[in-house]
Length: 401
Ligand SMILES: [Zn+2]
Image (cartoon, rainbow, N blue to C red; front, side):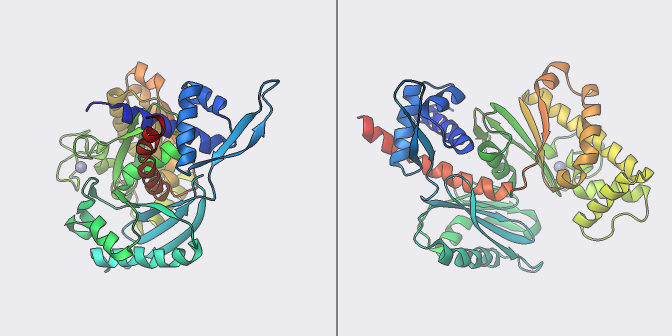
């Protein structure tokens, strides 16, 4: 795909605004230094961001003898973005201001039998109703929604949501009709939204080649290059969980055998523990995983052996990714990482050198996500922000023509 001047401008704009959100209040000069762009380029972008209502000048600072420099900040009193994390058991909706601070949030549980598109959209609508009153006259710039499964981003269609048995649901159109908000709606799945969240507000900010590995019930990766999410030809880039590490291995739910997910997905981890310890695997997946973490902390042999086996397969998978992508940073995320990270991370790091090539492994920093925030909702809101910023080109070209 050809990179147009518009793409480059947008990429620069994302970089400037990400630093601005992280370091506000700051100056054009510091932003130029942080982003490796010229002061003239940054000034142009800032002018457009101010015109778009995204950035404001908040004061001046002494520049050591020269003219005082204007200080810039995100326009926290301006428009808001809505990010919605739709999972199998809940709808979590958050409202963000332009500094990506959460200004409101609502949780709606989804009952096990409520799995029609109409019912799920009903919960989003109910959550939206609650925040609508509190928003007052603040303008909503866009709405981002993360849906489980495969999502056709361009058409706004849920291609396949396995646990709900959805096929080709025109979700964006149905949601737009129901909410009647009159703002753009962006859809994607959690792999993609978490990665966009990492770019805007996590460890991925300013990183050139980023891989985010999500360990949960399902397993996958998000890839981002040059500060932009990499989607691939059909938005399925990052299906790392379904790369094979053992062609004769256990059956995976995708239909293939021996995928990474068939070893390190939550059901697979709990199954391995149960084979070693008959008491294992009671309660919900989350409860059982917490019990495994507790048993590991207590030094129980079955738990220690389970962690070692999982870490061995995870290391093979991470090494494949490191060899293939040669990333600067690998972030481990997802609820399994949250619960088992203390146990898994050291075992993983210890095993990586025997699977990965030395040069790419040395270049890759490995980190566990330590953000307390809901990265899925944040990333969904960031998709809406990116959509809003894409209007920049029309604003900017009018300026300089
Ligand atoms: Zn698979």
